[in-house]
Length: 122
Image 1 (cartoon, one colour):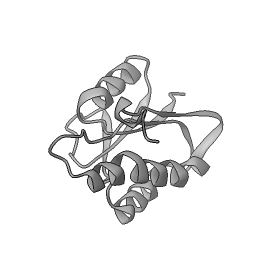
Image 2: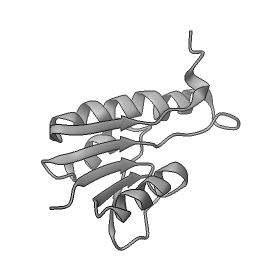
Image 3: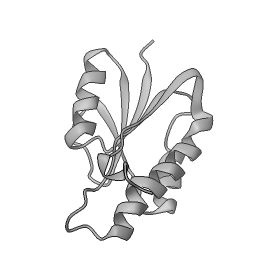
Image 4: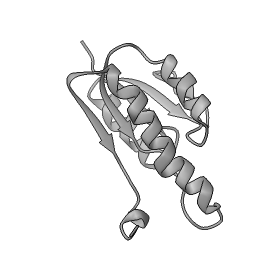
């Protein structure tokens, strides 16, 4: 039986590369992103990590049991307002992981990829 993995931010960048790697080992992928994915072998679920209602709705579409969750979604500093960066990169990620954790089977994994921009948060 193939492992079932939910990946946030799966339509571009590190998330897309993560999905490619997981697909190469036969995983069933659920990609949660604000951009709808186009791969036929990946289930695309709309999820805006800046919006708790969107996160909750996305979680409701996930199966009851997941083997792993990979949180890769994020927005980069620069032209993005700081409140949006915090909403997506931290608050949304935290809300998502907290909400999906009961679905991760015993012995499953949660992986969070974060930006080095947060290393000097104090």
